[in-house]
Image (cartoon, rainbow, N blue to C red; front, side):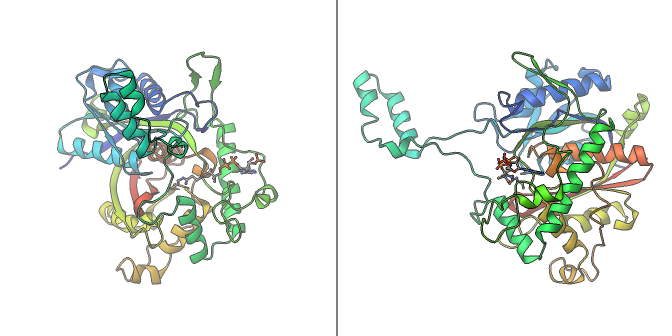
Length: 427
Ligand SMILES: CC(C)(COP(=O)(O)OP(=O)(O)OC[C@H]1O[C@@H](n2cnc3c(N)ncnc32)[C@H](O)[C@@H]1OP(=O)(O)O)[C@@H](O)C(=O)NCCC(=O)NCCS
């Protein structure tokens, strides 16, 4: 029998609006903090860790394998290898899945997985003309030769080229794709704002009640160590439907319904989980917060509805777990946009979609949008792309512990039309 993967515990940095408290930190800085404190809080002997697997969507050009850099930068034994996964917003889920596969095969019994992202630290590129000139200049021996390399450079070549959050196939940004979904599925502005309000109110209540203490660490921000960040700084306890209704649409200014208020914001943060084989966890007396029962990744055509990937992944994950949606007590759906969550839910409950898109006779099942994301979601808490999957897996496991429910579900949509569903269990 393959070994079951135990989630011993999970931990994340607070999530912060990009350009604010973590603006001077890199994804690696954030990841190192989360991993160091995860190891400390779990009391594990670092020598027993056999691999670090980390998700990161916009990698550093200088140190693209963030997982190995975490090992080298945190004082972990240097013999621990590490590799980095880029699967858009499902990167941390894929990191957890990959680590779990190693554990199931018996190739490892203790692995750290997670993800990190800094949208304050994105690589800004030069134009092709200017970068060609820089390369040519670097090969010249004389000053005049170096200067001559820039002879054909025009002012427009000096304009920076920042990566867009856009699909290379469709050319649409995530926001434009969500806007298309809202229109095609007739998801109203009011429904989206109501869902966004729920996200903020619940995240604010969970923070105030101390519910996140187990999964969110305090960061004393280097290099000055003057700023102490204890909680997520994007949650708006005071927001209201009236305030949300006043915000202008961003991605289709004239006819759109998607605003800064009902979208996940650009965010900095890192999250990590400690995974072990069930046998080792039990032998060493750990009390896992949950177990990974099954997972499935799937994809749809980006030219259709880009962020519907979870709808395709969910029935496969449920089948692999041998349960149905009705058996699930805790559901966490990543909120890229309120319109995306509501569209996912609409498709999951539709017989027509089941038959036409999923090749199934019956719908996956009905989900009540007010029954999911009980401690808020990415709209309020934020969404550092590479880290979100590990945040949600931890939150679901802690909710299973808190509520005594047996099964939990995580879904995450991702660029490229991809999606993931993971089934977790308490015992
Ligand atoms: C939507 C987006 C463009 C907004 O960016 P932004 O304009 O920098 O957002 P801000 O935080 O400045 O918010 C804009 C305004 O709305 C207000 N606002 C935002 N959320 C609010 C809320 N819940 N309640 C009340 N007001 C709110 C802000 O206070 C701000 O007001 P101001 O202009 O008076 O200061 C950006 O967050 C984004 O690109 N999100 C999508 C990210 C994405 O694609 N992720 C991939 C998912 S797959």
